[in-house]
Image (cartoon, rainbow, N blue to C red; front, side, top):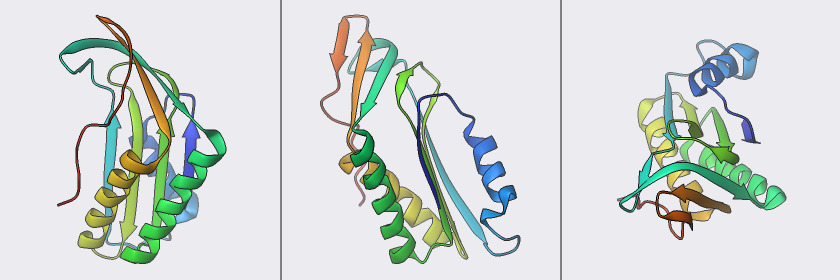
Length: 148
């Protein structure tokens, strides 16, 4: 399992490939990997957004991400989890979050990936300040995406 909060940009597809090749997962041990990559939009609430600053509470946020990954590993019988999350100044099209779940079968990987992402968005302590065409704006709530 790998959980990281990063201030610098990253390539999510390179990260997934490198993680698999670095021996975290033995070849042939998994039948599925479900991935979610969230990127920054250049709009929100009817305004253009030119950049965003993403802040977090360092110790608490890292622990929250670790706990949700552990829960998902147990509840879904996953083989491994990778979560990377950006902080700092972010530009449109930059990857913000990567959640990957490996399992023997696709259903567990899909379910776990979506559940981890929804829990991350609703429970992890991140704060967004957008630079908008109408001035700087703190985002008060995340885009809805609840599990059904």
